[in-house]
Image 1 (cartoon, rainbow, N blue to C red):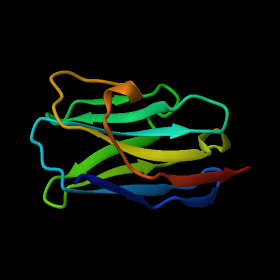
Image 2 (cartoon, rainbow, N blue to C red; image 1 turned 180 degrees about the vertical axis):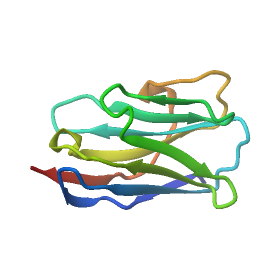
Image 3 (cartoon, one colour; image 1 turned 30 degrees about the vertical axis):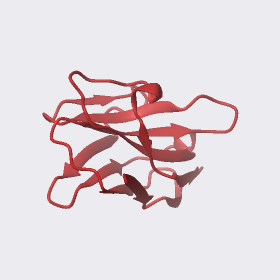
Length: 124
């Protein structure tokens, strides 16, 4: 059974940093995509950062230069380093995984596995 467990969310002031972690269990795929999405009430879930198994990455324009996605394969853990946080980054952040990823995907519908989410709140 695949489980994705996020951690690292919290409340910070604008300009601060947080690092989100997503520990995957029951999930071992060498040709996968994993990523981070975020959602605020009343809006669609949006892709923030996606990482393909070959190291290819995608970032939403709103986070380029501030967020970095990485993965520790030995720990089967995905990370999202978030720097220079802004109030508009406030959202529930979700980890997502797609076992077989022939090409980069960005839509939430392309990911079958999801974590429970971790809240990030940035105050001005």
